[in-house]
Length: 185
Image (cartoon, rainbow, N blue to C red; front, side, top):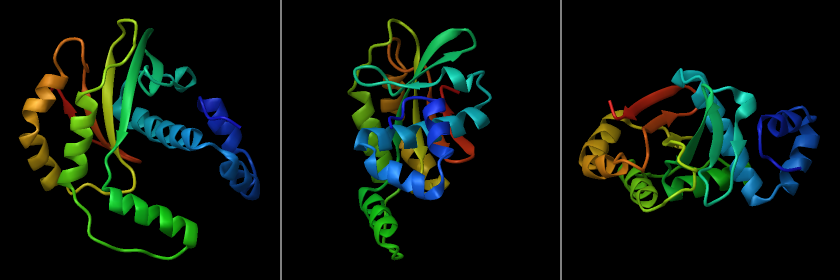
């Protein structure tokens, strides 16, 4: 099984619980990543009010952005990035594998700063179609006062990323249900 679009995700979700577990165990790391990004993106489409039709959503490989779709009648792209402290992500993965509850400190500022810095350096092939950056919280809940502070400090980087030919918009999204911020505003 490969995860590339909504029908692939629907096929996976339609399996029995043991069938999903077997299929998940056989998925490549890339397919697992695409599955998470696809779920995050579909959640985002529900709350963003953008006219994106889910059947047009497809996962792409570099040098293209992560997601291609149709926005209205035109092609549109989204590059995704999960905002999470690496130590927290590792503990979540260990907890899922072992069933043991894990706790520990995590940073709000460092992962947001790292992902902005990383995405600011990349270029994408879109044949001239626009691309938005969607940074999403999945494993880590954002502490909004700290997020606002970091975004304020990163404003020069944000402005550079929104320059012509780069990203059209930058979205900060908390899965499964709210857009926290969008640039430009």
